[in-house]
Image 1: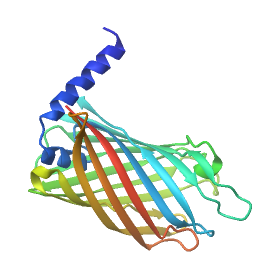
Image 2: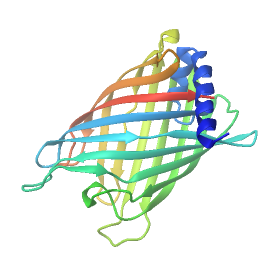
Image 3: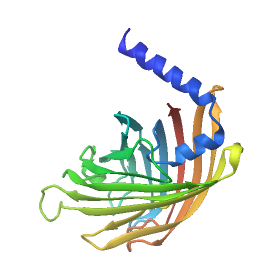
Length: 262
């Protein structure tokens, strides 16, 4: 049997299994960053009033999540974020730049049978995969990442955190970036509908600049082609703290996440 046939049969089996799962179960699994489930999210972030020219920036994050079983007690949950960026002009005579940004790869070691508190820890690596100097850094980065969450009835809440330091480079190229994403979801049972708030706050420790948003939105689990489950969310955020002349002031987030439960 060829590799292509094996992968195709595996995806067919996963899709058939997913058809039997309730919308509520799928919603909670989709909201868990370290669920033992293959997923393929396409997350589009549109940021408004960016830079001194008050232009619009768009970032499409392609972020596959793939769990790897490490024996009966542990899982390794890999999460890759590949951003496709439309970067606006930051000054007169500068054009919009479109291309691939730097890739972030995380690997969370997590218990295969967690208790009431679900957690994962591991490294995060930044790879200089950008196609233009305006879309990323030339330096590799490395740091720790962790996530913790709890499912309490129809509520799911927790936080993801990481910090990435550049490896080498001169003072102009070095970076020290922090990210924290608290998330709170309320699920409306078997309908697969839920409310979500998952703001992403960031800090540049070298400059002292913070971006702190507030907001949220709504999500829905549905199936296409009769069996394939998809998680869709629409959210909006206002940045109560953002660097002067850089922004953005506010942003929207739209995500389609294809789910392949085991």
